[in-house]
Amino acid sequence: MNSFKYSNSNKRYYTLDYYYKKKYDTKVAKISLNLGLTCPNKDGTKGFGGCIYCSKLGSGEYGGNPIEPVKKQFETIKKIMTKKWPNCKFIAYFQANTNTYGPLDYLIKNWEEVIKYKDVVGINISTRPDSITKECFNYLEELNKKTDLVIELGLQTTKEETSKLINRCSTLKEFESCVKELNKRNIKVLVHIINGLPYETKEDMLNTVKYINKFNIWGIKIHMLHILKDTKLENIYKNENFHVLTREEYVDIVCDQLELLKEDIVINRITGDPKIDDLIEPFWLTKKFCVLNEIDKEMNKRDSYQGKNFKNDS
Ligand code: SF4
Image (cartoon, rainbow, N blue to C red; front, top):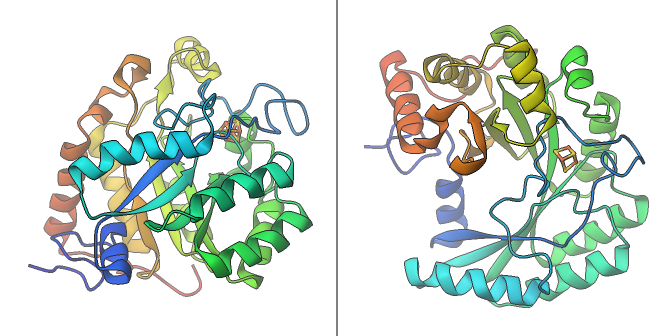
């Protein structure tokens, strides 16, 4: 039964799977690659030490091995994936750290290398809104003509106090100007937000989604905050013991966010996938399918769907 016009399952939101199946008529899988880059929020250019929740691997836990060339990383992961989905197509996902923060010729060489594979339909590049140079924007405009390009931007929250607390070291102004530049070049924008950041209220999290609605955004990734070992967040949590959302609270907030979001924004992620060995809290996240099921059940119970409460002036 189709519950929502942009879904091929019981989901009441615009699933990425639906988007890819419509576009490519086959399964599309992501291959996470690691260029061994750093981040301007770690090396002192914008900040030191990074965002408080960032892991040693720059949030690239599931990526390839950065000491290997990208081609090798790609082929190793592809071999595993084609065992599961023999005819699938791939998105090369540059995930760890800030993937536009490095010498442009090095970045171009690696991006161009992966799009040569005939089963690669696109590239996702994860970065910060303050880290794309004019030359890079111009190159991305050309790259976008050759492949299905998505630029992923970490916003996380619109609340100023939280942005300081998490040491994001980038501003809403930078986010807005980056989105404008990408829109100008017809490049798809995917925004990351995090629910459950320390001391945020439900209203704060809904405000972040209302803010996103104001822009021309292709997709969103909704994360639940992971408290990981060996991060600054771990120390803050141990010292301050701030409230961590329960699964029920998270599900309720996500459903409200889905109702507020524009119906044509593609939901690329709706829960987290932390590695259990690194996780301090919350452990309910390790049962990903339960979280997804609870979201479906709640949307069903509400007889609701993505965009139900979207307002143009939100
Ligand atoms: S911007 Fe991303 S890579 Fe850089 S510190 Fe923050 S989470 Fe880590």
